[in-house]
Amino acid sequence: KMKHLIYIISILCFLDNIKAQKPPSPILFIYDASGSMWGQMEGKTKKEIASDVLIRTVDNLSDNQKIGLIAYGHRSKADCDDIEYMVNLTNLSKANVKKVVKKLTPTGKTPLARSAALAIHSLKESKTKATIILITDGIESCDGDICKVITDAKANGIDFRLHIVGFGIIDGEKEQLKCAAQAGNGNYYDAVNAGDLGDVLTEATT
Image (cartoon, rainbow, N blue to C red; front, side):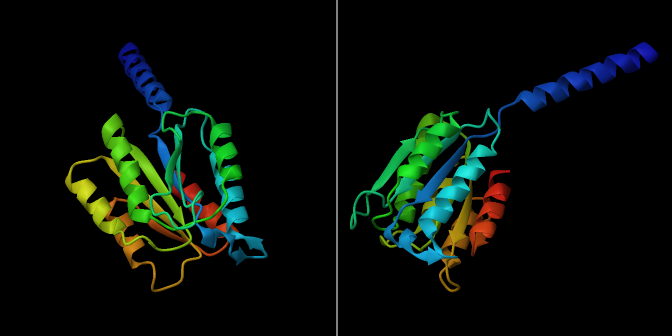
């Protein structure tokens, strides 16, 4: 009996080890580099706060965490298609993500629906299951409906989870974002300051 028990325990330990070694699902950040990120909060620009907090969040991720990054609004003042896949979702380098985030210059609009559509299309093409984390300080400014984009993608069987972090968004402007997060089997998080943003990004990435 003792031998039998030791055998069972060793199998359980082996299974636990396999579980521990299994890499986490990739995380794809969609990052707001629209012009409104120059707005002030706590004596700093929202750009500085969001950039610092995202860099700290990325630093705290495990070394086997794949991290991708899409940015919008960083090149053109009035272009709703100013969305760029800046770090591929196969990336394991934290330094790559941090370097890109540091050099982004907030400039343009807030095409939330189009950014989400690009992210989802990339997951569909690569047959990748991932967590998407959208960080935005404003609502859609390009006539898109992010809730519909997410709802349609889920109806089409695309496997992802969407969390949305609303950074300094006023009451009355959160409904579409909450709707999209709910449709994406995720959460909507409110961040009203740097501390909040750090907390919710830690929670979302966990």
